[in-house]
Amino acid sequence: MTDAAELRSRTRELLAAHPPATTEPLDFLKARFDAGLAWVHYPAGLGGLDVPRSLQAVVDAELTAAGAPDNDPRRIGIGLGMAAPTVLKYGTEEQKRRFLRPLWVGEEVWCQLFSEPGAGSDLAALGTRAVRDGDDWVIDGQKVWTSSAHLARWAILIARTDPGLPKHQGISYFICDMTDPGVEVRPLRQITGEAEFNEVFLTGVRIPDAHRLGEIGEGWKVAQTTLMNERVSIGGMRIPREGGMIGPVARAWRDRPELRTHDLHQRLLTLWVEAEVARLTGERLRQQLVAGQPGPEGSGMKLAFARLNQEISGLEVELLGQDGLLYSDWTMRRPELVDFTGRDAGYRYLRSKGNSIEGGTSEVLLNIVAERVLGLPAEPRNDKDVAWKDLAR
Image 1 (cartoon, rainbow, N blue to C red):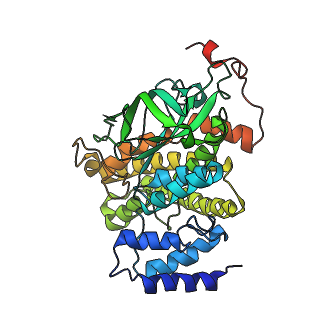
Image 2 (cartoon, rainbow, N blue to C red):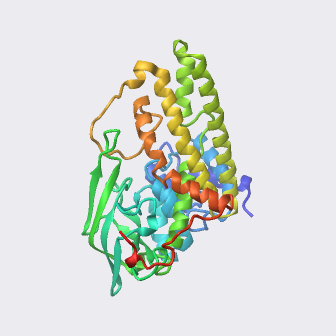
Image 3 (cartoon, rainbow, N blue to C red):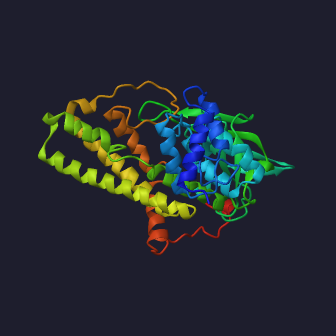
């Protein structure tokens, strides 16, 4: 049984063999993955050592102290937080060995082809078709709100393989090569001025059956693994006290006493406490993950994340007065990552409006919490047993 002492020893051996100061970052990350120190709870040979997730902190502390490079998780968050756990759970051994290493070291960026213009909150209503043609599937359809599609090499994709079945049953899950013919990525300019999201058109895209995850028609079950991990990765990120959106507001309060009022003070105190409660709840949720896959509790964390970000950013704009109305840059660009805390208050206020939509709308997540956490009766679903092709659209 590998313990903390052995992990420290393994990490120091890695650092001695590949000194961060003289080793190319990508080479160091590959060596770290091969040593089983990438995500220690993953299987041996796939970047891990089959040890509890909680021991990752031991490795991370040693590497941080030595100034070792990281894999820029903000840039590859979809791969790390959503694609990797899905590939690990449903992928073949060949798929795991092909995709997990370049994903973790950051050589290959991933995106998520789930939402569609007519299937956002009701994702199971999706209409993108996948038709079998020999050893391939031919994909036709449109996806939307796709973060990082302009950077991605691979995408996790759900498509309808049997329109004669009810909507949740006729879906399959694929890995799509974003460089293949027929994949067209167009930018979607947002309220912030930039195009972080994209719409993706799929026209006759051929995906080999070897790139299917899970059984044919079981894509909705596979997608649940992706979605639950997505909500944990969004709402349960590990941050220090006064990390995230509350940090800039607290600093502005301390640095600019002339802005203070009694009302703003009371609101800031309330939001500071709520942010700290959410942070500690996220820590507890991550500890629960040691025992297995995330559950519906991640939906509650993602709900709190969206509400707090919007309320905190609104308070910040109000606190800053005239300065809060300024916005530094409306330039149309296609960024590599989202940086909430490194931009100005205007950006945070505008960008946070999307938090209650991305990763599952707050309305849908409230239903999930009500039904699957609190055990309340489910809402009536008249289309549950109706074939997708017979649904009104």
